[in-house]
Amino acid sequence: MNWGKGLITGMAVFMLFILSMCFYMFRVPADEYDHQYYEKGLSFNADIAKERQVMADHAEPTVTVTGTTVRIAFNGPAKGTAKFIRPSSAAQDKTFAIANGEEITNGFLVAKLPKGRWHLLLEWQSGSKSYLYQQQLYL
Image 1 (cartoon, rainbow, N blue to C red):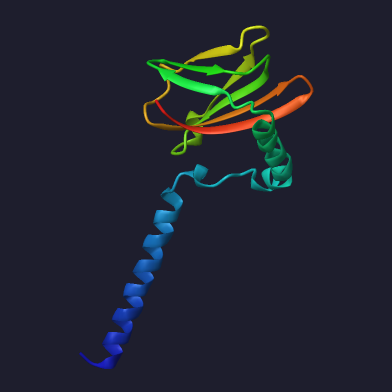
Image 2 (cartoon, rainbow, N blue to C red; image 1 turned 90 degrees about the vertical axis):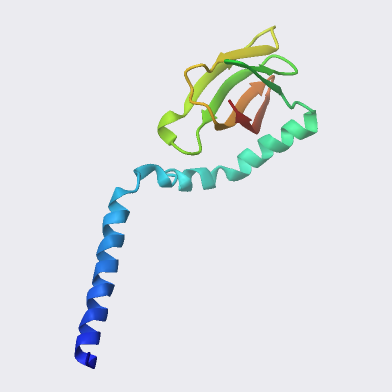
């Protein structure tokens, strides 16, 4: 084989590689990155302050998984949201409301959620203070 055929073969292999990468890129799911990364970056310091407030007030909620129910016990009255975030697919994320009043325990039925790893994000207000707590769960 002379150098001309080798050059053409090398260019053809490189072009096939580039085309295969283009086909692969268009088949990747659209939720591979966070679309609100800029907005979240602007509120990052506020989130850190809420997480520090949990530590300062010793207000860490107790999370227990029992069968098809996730129970969250707070130190006092709380109102906010509990987000179950699936790392593998944003389409499976679920949000539940927290409003416990005098009861300090909230229960969430998670039987319809797929088994596996979840990220629990709790954001609530108690009195005049705001809190943020994160934990990994395995359902």
